[in-house]
Length: 175
Image (cartoon, rainbow, N blue to C red; front, side, top):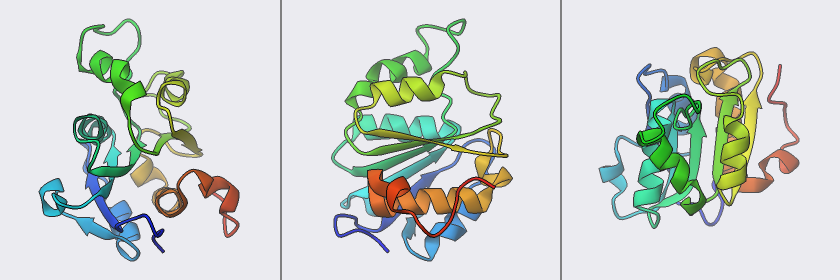
């Protein structure tokens, strides 16, 4: 199921909630899931981060752009409300969004109250090759709220990149 340009390796960085097991299980039938980035140090790989793990994935893609083939950020919290610390880690990552070098999918739960409402627009506007997806009937923890929808979405994006919505004719993402 991988594209010709893909290595078929996916590294998943968990957030603090540790709910990525359904995603790992769902992707493992078609993709090689590495236990850590060091396991694929010489290969290019897809990098998937969930919640705070999405922030780490974004930072890694910026710091090591030659290694990350495709980036998926699920419920990233890097962009904080303007009332937050303007000089904190989130501000630093937000300022570097235009430097993200690879195709990127940013996924939000439609009912997520942990991210600011205009975060999706900020990612879309600032990351050069960015796609946004909303998963209905899901909050911040999309992996727990709608595991199969997230598996389908991420798997489809890893396989097809930016044509994933247009070419997906086998199912729907929303309920």
